[in-house]
Length: 122
Image (cartoon, rainbow, N blue to C red):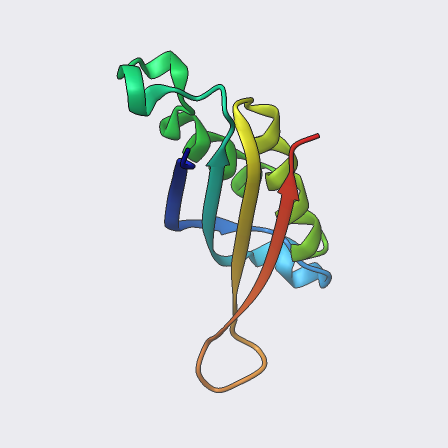
């Protein structure tokens, strides 16, 4: 018995997350990586039926909506919110979200920081 994973890499968006007021005013670039381990009820690999797996288009929509339409002070909270929303889609046993935030004020060249959050269903 194996597992099935859906992997989303480098989903880019412009968001307004951060502690400082200027981060809420001007925003910055973000990237998100998502790894979803599907639960046992997902049988799309056996029967080729779309309703028996996680719709990855819906996965993208959920992540983009949270990234662009919400505001979190902490990247940690953004990653947690994304994990919770992905688990709520159903059919997910485990979700692993990494949010990458572009920082421009700390070094002469832009720097990326990353926060990773992993949640299991149940």
